[in-house]
Structure formats: structure tokens, C-alpha cells
Length: 72
Image (cartoon, rainbow, N blue to C red):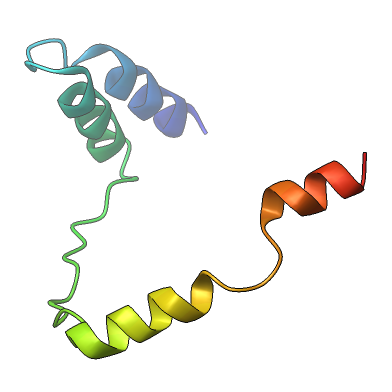
């Protein structure tokens, strides 16, 4: 338990040399052993026709603003 608390304390205080808040947070997480080196898989963009058809279908039906107003 003591080693774990020491590790958290070091993660919270050591990365002061980083240039941005995001880098500092990532450094703290890495020091704590909580940062994963995840690489997102490459994904092909959707077919333009399929995208246009999906957008058209999504634009149908009852608008959310109408549902909200009706239930007030």
C-alpha cells in the first residue's frame, strides 16, 4: 500500500517540465501505470452514397425540440 501511495504522489508531482496541461496529465497517468499505448485502428471512410443515404434517413422523424416542448 505504501509503495502505491508513493507512486501516486510521484505521479502528481514529477511531470512539471512538460509544455502543456494535456502532456502533464498524460505523464502523471503514465507514472501511475494508468496510461495505455493504445493505437486506434485505421478505418476506411464510408462510401459517399451510403453516407448521404444515412444522413437523409437520420433527418426524418420527430425533431428532438418538438419532443422536448411536448413533454414540458
